[in-house]
Image (cartoon, rainbow, N blue to C red; front, top):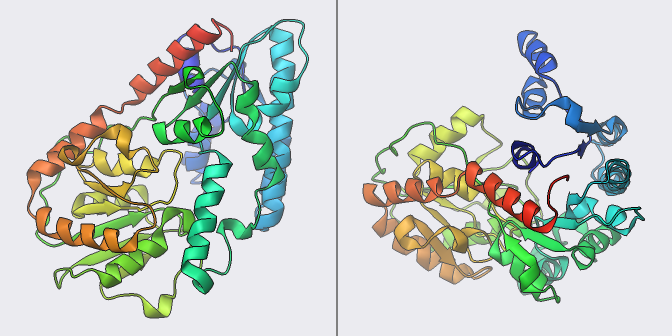
Length: 391
């Protein structure tokens, strides 16, 4: 988003916790510092540091709280408010408009100004009402198998309630997917005030997708939590009648052990703690299907990453997938939380996808329609339409 605004000379300030520098990132790489990749990812040659307002205390406090999930969650909630108030201060000084992510919007939108700033919010996750009801229903349906909801919450946190009400103060709302937009409309948002701008994806490592494997090799990449539907995928795999050599590889750095009994994984399921980017690309290209049956997603960037490498995807309609394409594009859908339907779809695709190079080419082409250049142009159009220059 800041690059999109900067490209169009619309950016007065980016307010963020930490912005690196080319010199610092280069030095870290030469010294082989473990955080060199992180430092490199927090700077861009097209976004000059003079346009960035850093709030280093935010990054430092999160670093100190990183070992305690509960403390880290509380610190992040507090820091969202801090960043929002700094954004308000910058808007007052520069007499600029506000284009803020939903967790950082409320305090800035509520502030008093001597000018009349336009208020644009980017709602990147679905509204909490839809998300919480879906997780509660899933928890009740599975009964004692789940000991708690995602993150251990039995109620929506106050900060989430506050951030998901920012749209009510906004002049315009940007959502990353039609599904996210629909969850806002369900609680009263005017469709005329909403623009859907889907994320983009970089070019794949190779132009042509690799040949389709002859065996049914399925890949999941994501957090091992309830919202991602990993427990439904494992149970569907157990029920499905699949070819004998079929494999399901679960790539996840975090796994909720209340969801999955690791001592009783079905045949063919392989658990991987994490892969490098190079290894992950290789896994995409050597698999025949990416499957993440999420209960609810604001977008689902990993679907685009898989498609860009020529890997067809299987997910649900509660994601970005309906915006990207249909079965002719290598995009397959199943109902959220329906294990039997998911098992049937896996069985069907196990007969359709092996050796199918045409669908892999179609998947790669579908990803090219979701470019970052298109995302940035859409962000600029919304900004000019609603606010003019000066975000």
